[in-house]
Length: 186
Image (cartoon, rainbow, N blue to C red; front, side, top):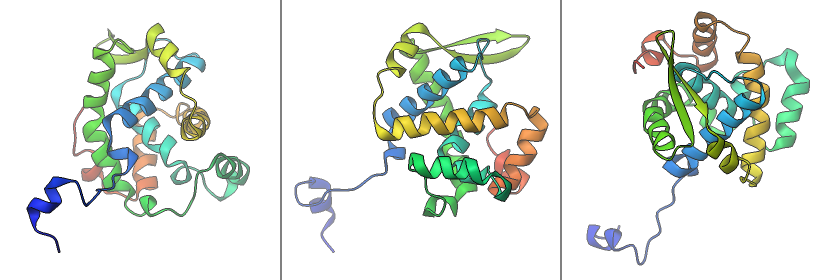
């Protein structure tokens, strides 16, 4: 093992990070989600709770779709998603960690005028701005295209559920106890 000062120098060792550890990556993914929601006619906005569910399950779509939805699963496989990655094993913890950081990503998007927030009937609803739409339309990566397709499929299914039903289904999909999902209060 190398001494700590050598590890800190960065000259001999390169640390590898997952893209999901990067704020810019996560913010861009959420901006794509907002663009999908706008394209689906969601003009009033979405609350932070649903944004968290939509984003996480769009990135992990095989948690949502069961045996009876084989056609959808095939489409997701063709987009490049895998059903047996390590990330699915720790999904409840990953959901909790991502949900904790969601406010940070939303604040960054708000600060850059890429999304907007409005208080409608006492609820904070987030939506994409014209500048956000312009930026989102410029993403051309394979992952961005795959995530967008997954978000279209996932949000179609999840948007039909009331908040309580969505929360209960999420617990089943994550195989998590209620205290894990409710750990971070929005």
